[in-house]
Length: 414
Image 1 (spheres, rainbow, N blue to C red):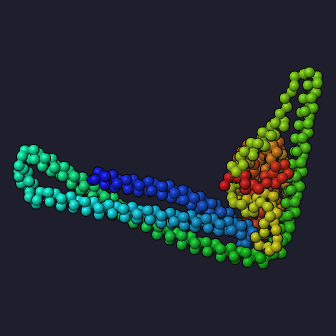
Image 2 (image 1 turned 120 degrees about the horizontal axis):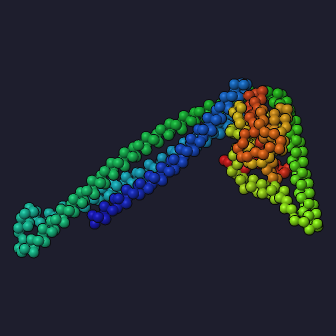
Image 3 (image 1 turned 90 degrees about the horizontal axis):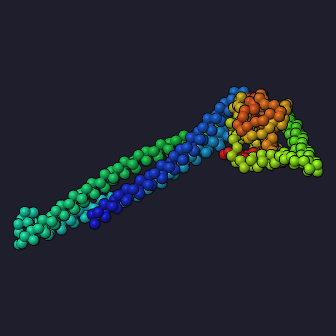
């Protein structure tokens, strides 16, 4: 009976340890996510500071501030998740505490019952009198064994009670510590919410200020549209030239093979088409796992979306815009060959890299370190970002399968 209770106490203890270990893993994951949010916030703060220094209010500052608000909201959610986890942890620990208190009460009752039973058996006489009152030697021997077993049982029961009391005291300290941690998290949540309110107020001020500059914004937008149209023409012309070149090389390869077969010569193995297919397949296999071409955040997504300030204005984007810090390095996302380096007024330099049937386009560069026909590898630097008159560095990044524009966000790592 006593051994059984002892096992139950330690079973509860190990259940507590398992629950604690699981909670620690979840806590570590949440803290990792929080740190990632903090790192992103630090990066965005740098971009926000640079844009704000150049001009008091700009679309770039608004974009950075909007991203900063999203990150702040994500940070608050991380803190709230930690609070919820802490509540669950405290609840589990309280259940363990109640179980230990119940066990301790039962063990004490059993101990009292044991003592009472022993007194009742001996009739309240002393141990020596109980032994010497034996009528036979066998009875004396039995009584001695009984007293030895009884003494061992009492010691074991006392040890179990002491162990449970120690676990109980430890559990109380753990719960108090977790309550302190929860209170700190709640204070952190309040502080971060206050920061969020301040960011939103600043966002409203910038939006009101930019709304008053509608004429200038529309003029800038029109200029950008013209530049983007030129960029699209350059991209499409180059891609069509590449498609025609690939088709021509494949056709010539087949003609050489046919001529070799007709003249009974050794058949020449031409791998032009095979190489294109292999590179295209390799590119496809890496979907959702490509590195970002530059550090920063997505300031404009793929497809159609509303202008951040001008009402009724719809923006069309065949790629994504990544707002970066000034002078940020731009890198290739995959092995390929540079097919063109072109300069577009307003947008800066553009580098187009082919990967079989796929093409990646990097626009908005100031300095370019590669040239047409050059082979490049994944994460190779191809240039640095341009800073426009408003202090904004924004990479226009596209992925195309031949002339079909794809959403780059679906191809990059989260």
